[in-house]
Length: 175
Length: 303
Image 1 (cartoon, chains in turn red, purple):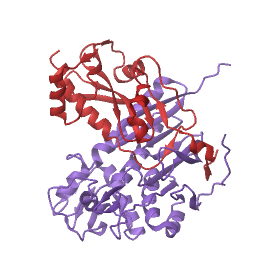
Image 2: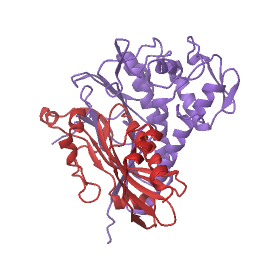
Image 3: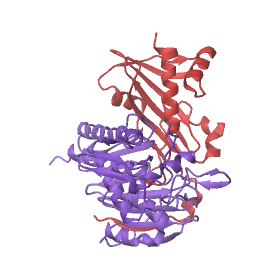
Image 4: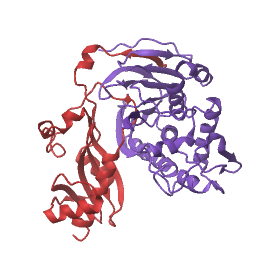
């Protein structure tokens, strides 16, 4: 099989349809096994008090949008956290594994979904993702598997991880 | 006869300031997972060596110390610098890693604590024996895209070394396909990046796309972007995109920057590297296509 550098334009109909680019990489269970293979994890969800939220925002400089955080304690030390971030172009669910000392072990993107800014900031549109990480995986877009274009920054995840490290200090470290 | 079923594993991690995706196919899940981890480890290593933002990276050390002293860098950083300097020479300075001062003044990179020499260019960077680098003037380099391409090449090498036969590594649009399977790569619409506008089929080849659509912003009443012409210091602002396919991703990425500035005048350089190029205008119409690889262009059908 050879490379073909023939550019094939998509039909106009495909352009008009909101062909959002979406991939589910890992379910919660798969992400846990990818970051902490062979370990057993127990769910220990955390609900932040107003004072805790303020402390996290002050320490990280990043706004906390949800008081509920999905957290699992790892046998033998460490934490597994599922979090989500919303950017101008993207909506991402990702998992962070923390070592027993609170340092980042690994980050895995679980769900990646792109669309237009206006749509993504719409509460109703976002509501369809509520609870998706635990039960119902997103429907996958089978058409676009690989996409090339200008680089999309991952700054929102970087900020998200900064916020989770502050969350660890405030809510997990002494528990 | 027992038939082993092919499986594909796809993972994504935030690295190099973007989303890096590795997808591999094979028969045993465990060995695919090992390969993926090796690929991400190679990318993380390039990130550590060449990040502009990490004060301990080779790039930061060079920016601090290579003038007026000199600095020894990792052989990988050296390899990227060698390619960058070669392309700077061949493009007569259109490609120039020493233009990071413009990126800092336009808010794309943090400012450094010292005052870079405004006359400094790639000609003030000297690569000496044993990975030693010397700057003749106080300058700021950024390996941005070319390091991203290099990371993709290292990741593919790591996958191959782990015995993986086919896959794709995509670092925020800079990608490389390897193995006997060809893959369809969609290209973003230059003015509506959330949409794909068309596709090419690649096999054993790398492709990079440059555009300003995610990064363009207003600066002193004008649109600016991180895409610069090293000769003029001007940044691209038009909502067009340039895709280049080449044997290596590092080359493909660097060549997109050159085609962005030179357009059709880059044909000689593209031919020299047996690279292909595609320019998409604002309305996504291909305004220039250049084919120099020996592959026969063949139309691919889409549903």
